[in-house]
Image (cartoon, rainbow, N blue to C red; front, side, top):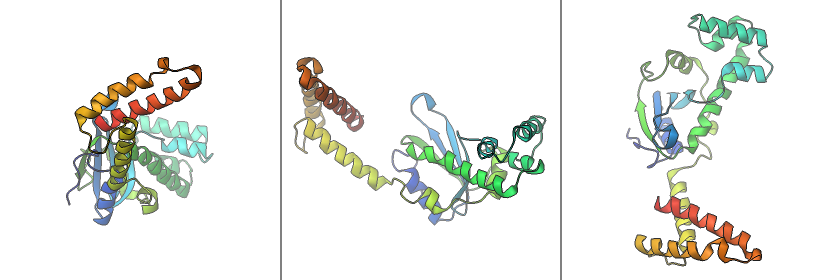
Length: 234
């Protein structure tokens, strides 16, 4: 199975779709490549092509249980103390041992997986690696255990309605056409022509050249032009 090496060439929806069709088990690692978060990694653990756990930013199990009033402060504090003292059980296993309902913990784990996976769909620049096994060298041991025991997400949760590469390409085509319209150019315009037209239109749309009645619209148009030009020309 050949996956795209970067989200700049695909989307998370496409990649998860491939893994789901192949019923793949392993760890999908996304490594951010731009901005202040360059180098930050996210690990999506899949069993049979469906996500079961996500090692990334997002809510903790204790927080989710507490929000739903399924875990009181005393048991939460005790579970945290036990983990800090070296208890190697999963946090959910610890709170179950302290009296929490197992079904409620499993519901919270599923909620956590959805919540942590959701922001990853917004990534447009990240390196992609897939390890066809749940290696502890790729992710913490606890996450490997969680992936093996947690419920799988439904395709409704992680595939249906997700942005795909064709959709993104169509969006980029529409944005290019809008930019060319704002630059008063035809579809055949090359990069040099666009650059010259952009400089001219920025000068023409500058709010300082407008009267009070026209200033707000010029500011709006200029902001849109700058945004489109940056996205299309990169």
